[in-house]
Image (cartoon, rainbow, N blue to C red; front, side, top):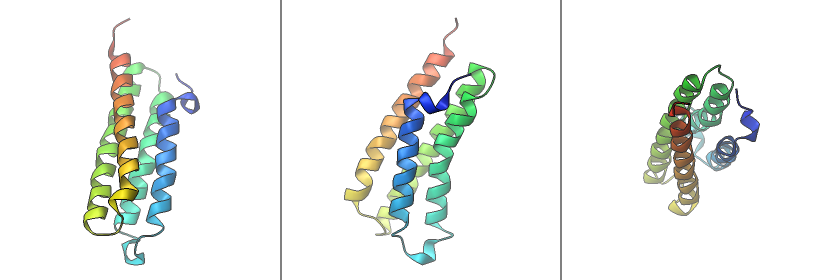
Amino acid sequence: MHNFQELKIWSKAMNITEQIYNITAEFPKDEKFGLISQLRRCAVSVPSNIAEGSGRNTNGEFRNFLGIANGSVNELITQLLISNRMNMVSENTINPILNELIEVQKMNYSLIKKFSKKN
């Protein structure tokens, strides 16, 4: 079992989630049940799955939740790119977030690899 609040990846994912909430607050109101909802749920999913996995009994279970979190990162990247294509958010706004998401993915893969090693 791991203390998720001490994990750098969880902290980064929490910061990204906060950024997503802030930028989606500026989206058109008719996207409330569209991209706003999708982006927010997806962003929340990343640190939530890291936290849930960290509380599981085995490293294998943790790896599984890290995989789910990684899927959510890919989904979030896609939704940010769609938002940009639909002119709801600028490239200048999303590029730093995209870079942070890529960093979270790299950290995630490192953790998965670490917990895949046989002791």
